Length: 140
Ligand code: ZN
Image 1 (cartoon, helix red, strand yellow):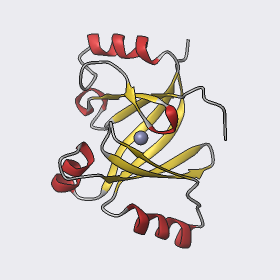
Image 2 (spheres, protein in one colour; image 1 turned 90 degrees about the vertical axis):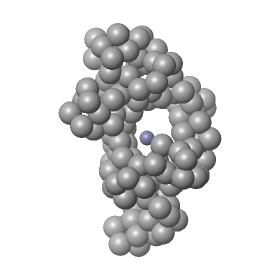
Image 3 (cartoon, helix red, strand yellow; image 1 turned 135 degrees about the horizontal axis):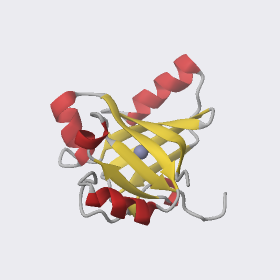
């Protein structure tokens, strides 16, 4: 029954992902292992694995993207928490019926070949929650 498996990553909105990566690497000894641009979300992301979870640094690809607007309004900071789930489509359907899903309720392409949906902060206690189902591509 538990379809929510773990905290997959914490997303941090930054203006300059490269500079932010430098800090986390030099000051905290983490190492970015993956960079990716996700056009569907309008972000360039850098992933820094940390135990079972990952820090995801998000730099918007433009001002008119969700993260670009977030930075405009609130400045840099924690943008979302991502939970890894199984059965994403079914879960989004149920959560849509509760009015908790942002957008159409259909999953969108995420990083790492995952599929994602976002829950409204009004439903979750003020936190943007990303639900991600991992892709099944072979590890490289
Ligand atoms: Zn994320």
